Length: 374
Image 1: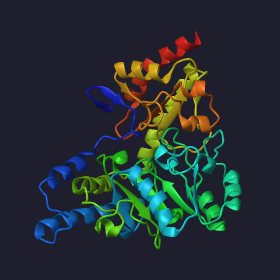
Image 2 (image 1 turned 90 degrees about the horizontal axis):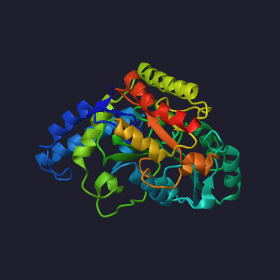
Image 3 (image 1 turned 90 degrees about the vertical axis):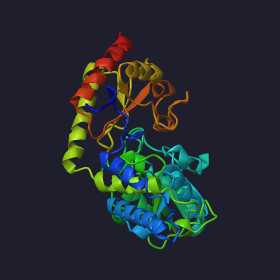
């Protein structure tokens, strides 16, 4: 059972446990106190750690090390893409799918948000209509996989459409590494955001990956770090941990299949015992670890509290907004009623989860579902 102090942890999309190899790398890095911009031997040692991590992250993502810009996380990487890439390439406007993370939607006005279908995937026809009417070039932001439902977006089709209209594509891929295979080089996109703590690294480290020939205007100016693309002394410990996570988080196809089978068993038992339950995005391609489910009549807050008291950790929507009372913007964009959206919780499995974790969840959640049906 995946536990911390006897808690079954089913919230891997919010953050993941630090990998043992990452903890070891951090312990070894704490004595490397030199500034990586200093030319003396202690500075060079710190620089070597940063550049070694850059190579490891590039290897995980199928990218070139020179095209990786380290940031403080996925939110900053998104901001650097949507402000810095747009400025660096002369984009006239930014459009984004309506189910993007809030750190993306903050850069796209309401009229610039492309609707999704009931399955949670972007409406490509609606996107094309927007591209036909906007002065170019347009920067499209489309996530690889949704953090709440796990739904995979049609990246290849979007890239093809973008090329037809001279648009650029940024992809928030924060949820992808460690959960599915990803290769920046074959996606055809112009920029991609990732975050270390989503696959075994530390919070506070992320990266923006650029395609060859793409440039960004620094969102944080003031120094020459990261090839003058992101100023500020590098977070050496976080970056070294990022590299260690990238080197040791490569999940095998067999592990993907194991986690998916675990999620499928969970959903099968949910639907057999609580037929009124709604599993959102189930008809679309999804990450194999994610289940977003609602039981009408039982608020997400009630479910979270009951599960937490029983030692089961899950979320209600995005971890960045789960403390808010308002229903998930992702589910509302999918056409889910506000009442049902307020009853949704998200389970996200990961390395170390077993049947025991699923059984523990079901043992607490099923009586709640049955009481709502009574």
